[in-house]
Length: 86
Image (tube, rainbow, N blue to C red; front, side):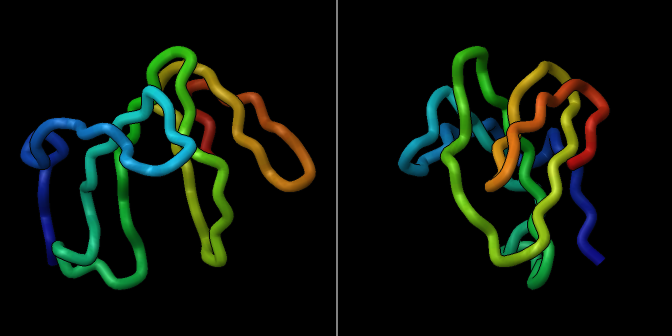
């Protein structure tokens, strides 16, 4: 069992992916922690920013802590608000 706390994971770093703008990430659970099927990331997207459009061949979840945004899928755009689970 791997246990950590978000405050122990260091500072946020700029999301280094083409198409990202004003988006920062903190990697919470990943391969280096022994995760093989599920990864957990904490993103902070500044006003006017966004993560890149991408596709996933696997299940992908998002939980909105605060702020508002737009999730884009192949067939629609979803306005998001705090508490939304996508």
